[in-house]
Image (cartoon, helix red, strand yellow):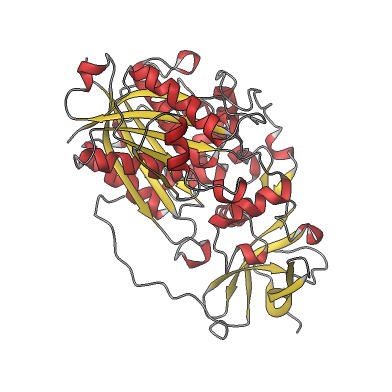
Length: 102
Length: 387
């Protein structure tokens, strides 16, 4: 612990589509039992921190899980429905990760 | 310029179905002002995190100032997620230390039960990253689960290692009439509790609640003329880290816990060895373990050494008492008010007015208020006025 004044760092770049590697391994995971509004129908669902092949961490749901999840499992990014918004049920698509199909 | 606390008050942490933001904040303010015997307030700072999404209400500064009869006083909300209380205290400290105001009222207030279940989780999720976390169905508890799972994996720990933190919190909360949950936890129950987001269970996670707490602060050397037992703010610092776990180089290192505490202690010219009681942000046991490590009180991976033997070392009569009134876990977590509850509790300790929760002879206290999982951290060091 140092008593230094505020440390400076490089400005953080927010990731954009295309920035990330599409494969990685499970760095950590949890089974979400209590979901926020918009996600109730999916509960329980796995949320994970995935360590991508380029070294970045990314927060995402795991999908197509059949059996146990373990730290270190190989996974790959897929496009899935995340939730729906508004009275007309507009679908929000995004990324999830599924077990790597060899 | 020195800054002292001359009044403190808090309302019970509950589900206050019949009270709104104004009533809760006003009650706490009235207790603190009465305690101080002082009503000449230059500015009112509000700590609140979620009124916009819990209650569809902003501009609490105007709302509560009018409710308290403070006229056209300077007043606004300070928001930093669950560190909003600590941030509001920091804002008051800055204004007083700079000489911009001579007295301030700080009110931490949260009305969480206007909304329940999945709606409350979504309302609370505004404090997560909207584009990368909330959109993927994350919650703060789920992210705490990710953090705890990784920690347990790296250091080969099991759930029982964390139990002592919750046992200690509930042991102390059982003695606090203002606490939300006043039942002690039965040893062994922790690891069998229902999972919220495994490995974070019901007995590991602090309950959201309604509450309000308030402080009256003055600057200068005249606080001892106003009250017999002023408490001095001898260190004040707020630091930030990446909002998201995924952006941190090392997710198991709470940098802002470390840097804000170091800055506050350096200002106070104290070390942790001088601190007699700590109010840490124990929203989850993993936060307590990682905070103890970031504070330098244990090695990496060794934070749970403080929870062993049912938390004996952190008990009211232990080596370093933590969560002396029950902490977030047992007293409850009224989100944006929590940082002020912690500070009021520290004030009572230093005045020797903590009743059944008293840490004998406490002279210096540390209160640490965390937003998210370490994204915003405010640390304050309080000292009893010399005899």
